[in-house]
Each structure stands twice: as C-alpha cells, then as structure tokens.
Length: 344
Ligand SMILES: NC(=O)c1ccc[n+]([C@@H]2O[C@H](COP(=O)([O-])OP(=O)(O)OC[C@H]3O[C@@H](n4cnc5c(N)ncnc54)[C@H](O)[C@@H]3O)[C@@H](O)[C@H]2O)c1
View 1 (cartoon, rainbow, N blue to C red):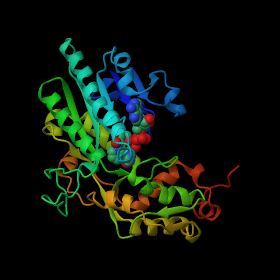
View 2: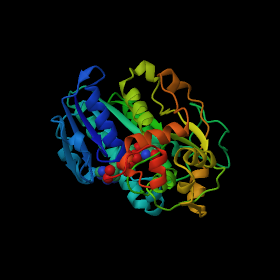
View 3: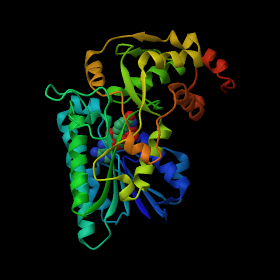
View 4: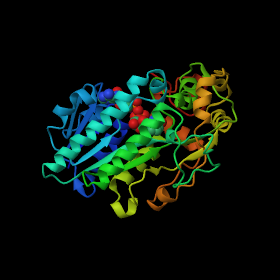
C-alpha cells in the first residue's frame, strides 16, 4: 500500500507516520511507501530512518501535480492552517484549508476516473465545527447527530471539507472518512497559532521551567484527547470497513471533558507547587471567546462502536506527555518529584 500523509511533518502527521510504520499494514495490506508532504521537512529521526519513508516539501496546492503524478492507495489529509491563523488571515485559511482540499479531492477523483480503485481518504476535521448559533444554540451534550454550526473560519472550512469528502465518496471517487478531532493535549514543541494552544502550553511551559499565562476562566470546560488516543482514533477510522464506519458523515472522536482548574490541579499533584508558581492568569477575550464557543461534553456512540474510548483522566494524559518527552521537563523540583534523572 502506498500512503500519502499531507501535513506529514506536523505534530499528528509525524505520530501517525510512526504508528502506521510500526503496525506495518493498513486495512490488511502491507505498507510499501509512506510519503510525507508538508510545507516544511519532517524532523522525526526514527520515521526518516525507515526505508519506506519519502518526503516532499512545499505548499500542497502548488505541489499537487507532482505529488499526484503517483497513484496513492490511501491519503491522510492533515495539512491545515490552524484556527488562530485562519482568524488572523482570512485568505490563508481559504487557500490552505478549502482550496487545497478541493483540489486534492479532485486529483484523487482523476485517479479513479483513470481506472484505479478509489483511494481511502482520511480527513482530519475538528471539534471546531461545533459552535452556538443564535437560532441553534449548542446543546449541553453534543451527540453524533448534532448539527455543526461553526463560529470560526477554521470551523467553517473543516465543515465544508467534510461535506465535500462525503459527496466525493457518494459519487464513488474516493472512500472518504472524516473524523472530528478533539483538542489534542499535551502537544510538545513550540506554541502554534491555534486558539487552543494554551491547553498544552499551560503544562508544557511550566514543566520546562518557563512562565505561562492562562487566557481563560479556570472553570472553562474543554474536550480533550491525548496524542496517542487521537492517533489511535484516526487509525481506527481509516481501518474500519464502510459498514462499521456507518454512513458518510464525520465521526466525533471520544473526548475527555475536564475544566482548566481540574487540569491545573492534576499538574500540581504530579509536578508540585513550584511549577504552579510559574502560571499566571492573563485574560485574553479573543482566545476565551473562541474556546468557550466549542462544546465540552460529547456522547460518542459511533466512536464507542468502533472500540474507541476517551482518555481516562488528565493525570494520565500528563503522565503520557512526561513519559514521551522526559527531556522537556527542566523545572528542577518537578524532575525530582517525578523521579527523572539529573539532566546531563
Ligand atoms: N492538534 C489538535 O489539537 C487538532 C484538533 C483538531 C483538529 N486537528 C487537525 O488535525 C490536523 C493535524 O493537526 P496538527 O496538530 O498535527 O497540526 P500541525 O500544525 O502540527 O500540522 C499541520 C501541518 O500542515 C502543514 N501545512 C499547513 N499548510 C500547508 C500547506 N499549504 N501545504 C503543505 N503543508 C501545509 C504545516 O506545515 C504543518 O506541519 C490538522 O488538519 C488540524 O486541523 C488538530
């Protein structure tokens, strides 16, 4: 199987690549080639060392003719401008998230019309498709049949692309599946332009001994998923046969519902009071407005049917981050408390 991952140098793209390479197959077929396409070059050494991996850099839309000259059995379309970027730059959002997806879908359609089997097409949608509209207020619990009413450009683009994937699937051009990802936390690396970025930075930065500011009210409720659980959900959606996936509508991945206050309490219990001293409260109405418009409680019947479940606790999510990235924990008392050896 030849697989293309767009956004393959990104946070989830790299983790997805690593997971697919170690499982070795997708839908029962051996993975022969994995192409990572991104604006930037991938940096994950273990992934790049694998002989099945290739990469291609550049704007996806500009590179589409080159990339799609090859036939792909599966496309994981992850490349995307993030929520804050789309709010700040309307044209960037339209280009990166809408125009690019539409042309990528058309390139897959051309391959099918040329006589190939329809490619498996996974699209990473987002919890940001949900929001509260005056005419259609968000219900307390979002279910699989809740109508998305996105309240940001990013959410609108994701919802439009979900519909395109459904229609290209209906027409038999692709075998499309869309999964709505919850906010993924804790994300390693540098802060990005996502409005939800603080839901990682609030923990990652203090653990590293750096100051961090909380832009929202502590009682803000959020729907989260750990990186490992998110990638497991993405793979399960791609692996499922069409009947088990059920229809063509996007599937909400499971969510851990937690308040920012509970998240901080989990951090303090694990890493100690010195880490908490690095956190201040600095209200940011624009971030608070975007994040509080997203739903926090889900009833995930379809995902549960695929055998997926939410992370059990935010403590478990934090432990996963510390286990995966022990070198990033640099606050001395936290290292000691967590039993991490002295850094070299
Ligand atoms: N991480 C989350 O919390 C979360 C939540 C919901 C949905 N998602 C979705 O999951 C996907 C992956 O998210 P992520 O956290 O890995 O994001 P990321 O920003 O780490 O990765 C996205 C990658 O896409 C690339 N990219 C952006 N525009 C491009 C273009 N025009 N051409 C080529 N490459 C381009 C970026 O360089 C980046 O490496 C995205 O579609 C995102 O919208 C993520």
